[in-house]
Amino acid sequence: MTDQTTSTYEEPLQSWQDGATRTAIINFVQRVTDSTHPAYVPPAERIAAFDNDGTLWCEKPTYVQEIFIIKHFHNQVEQQPELRHVQPYKAFWENDRSYFETLDMEAINQLMLQAISSIPQAEYIQRVQDFFRDIRHPHYNRPVTELAFTPMLELIEYLNAYQFQIYIVTGGETDFVREISEKMYGIPRSKVIGSSVAVKFELHNGRPVLVRQMSMLEPFNEGEGKAINIHHHIGQQPILAVGNSNGDLDMLLYIEDQQRSTLPLLIHHDDAEREFAYEEGAERALKAAAERNWNIISMKNDFKRIFSFVPERVTSTSK
Amino acid sequence: MTDQTTSTYEEPLQSWQDGATRTAIINFVQRVTDSTHPAYVPPAERIAAFDNDGTLWCEKPTYVQEIFIIKHFHNQVEQQPELRHVQPYKAFWENDRSYFETLDMEAINQLMLQAISSIPQAEYIQRVQDFFRDIRHPHYNRPVTELAFTPMLELIEYLNAYQFQIYIVTGGETDFVREISEKMYGIPRSKVIGSSVAVKFELHNGRPVLVRQMSMLEPFNEGEGKAINIHHHIGQQPILAVGNSNGDLDMLLYIEDQQRSTLPLLIHHDDAEREFAYEEGAERALKAAAERNWNIISMKNDFKRIFSFVPERVTSTSK
Image 1: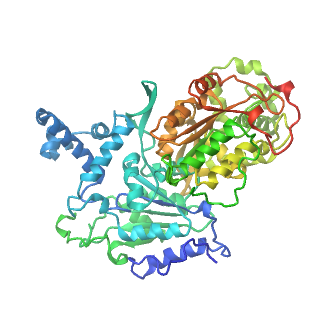
Image 2: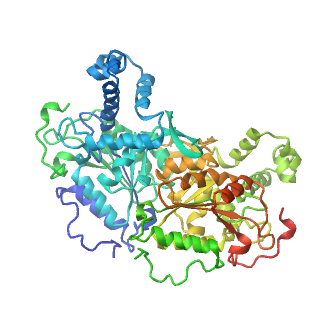
Image 3: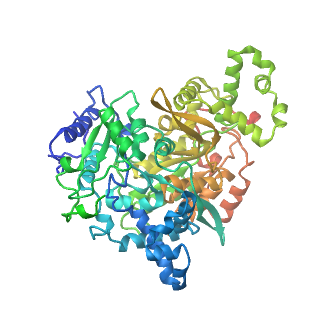
């Protein structure tokens, strides 16, 4: 009775342990795709929203985007060695965290913008592609593009089979994530909603060029911004959303508040052996999830495997 | 060889006259969907962008959105009759254009925002739905939702059959157009890119509510704004775009500038009998189209029919 598009779906979510969470997901998908069920949702409204950092891929020991910014300043020093005596290059080069602790939020943002702005869009894309081609994860020593969580890839595949439209809703910079969304997750660039750098339309020798500016669009895609940007971009509430941090809480509250069945999911990073165990930055989200009876995905208990590779034990570097 | 999804496509674009424009469209679609052709474009990159007012539906004698704003102030007066003595209600009620001519752009914008802001999103949607249910076109005396151009609906259908992803890229208010995009054009709300009202995330009795603010997001979706917002929303350049005014020129320039086959199209409102003949607001676009050898769609010569109904002669009200 359900309108699943692929008939080959013998056993979905194979990397998920049998248990309450997996069952809740499967039951939800079966209900909303069964045209005879009161909870039925037509395909056009089957929107799912996934956070990226910590939800689709590993965000520890540091955001991949942070690695990109550090790498940018290292590249600058390599091209102009004399910069290594000048701040902030010196601090990046020497990995001097004490320098950054002296800076306020605005100064940190300006450094971040320096690495991703003031260049034509095409040049930035090239810079991001170069980065993803070369960079390896500091802990797992794998290309960062292999850092997707296998069970989440299966969840995406499962939802795709049931005609869900899947969006990434990330605090990360939109165009940065767009460069890996199709390749890593099979999610097209147009379905990445992130924090965006303002661009200016200029004519260079009569040809239109979008030039990245030293400012971000409002709102930043975190917290309330996720609900707001979902509204602007999609124009309707997702019925399923997955996050892992306080920055995802408003999005989960926003999707939950509807006259129909919804499934807010929160990933709990509780696996100190295979990934990283931490609750910093997720305290409010975990509390709300417990109070509201949301399904909490325990990476330790719900995931048979985490990555496509077998990770070495990481306990020593987790915090 | 082409990967068309429906095999029932005997004769596309039936309301289009045989001629250079229709042939150019068909040749373009055949080329970019033929996997053996050098101009082949994979489905994920087959993006098409359509302006709305004057491109998909009639924009004369006045934008439908303008009718909405006027109607809003009339409704206010009907609910509180004493307002008819107070500006700006008086001017709206008496259709006193001289009053509006005394206002600057900022004041006009504030009036417009008054009709579409300072209310929760859900309340606005209700207001827009009520409007579209009741309102008739001042000239054709039909529901405004019947004002789509039949040949453009056929073009959308044709592109859909070849797996194009079709966006509306309109100067109109995003959520206003979203209420008719699916019904009139079969284009989902998530594929409407327009001029957007800022929203604020509030908790009302613990429930998340998006409240429309008295300000618009930057940039307004007109001129350069169309290219910029296409970038933010889709993250790639369309290969086909259709517009009809100066406000579409930058979008057409933006899609044209690629290392692959593109099709910029400009509609010329030259049919004083069946629609309205005018070039005001399209002068720069028509000039650029002629210089750059873009295909110009003549409504008079390229369209066998304009609407799903037979229009009465409109010469008297055209300008």
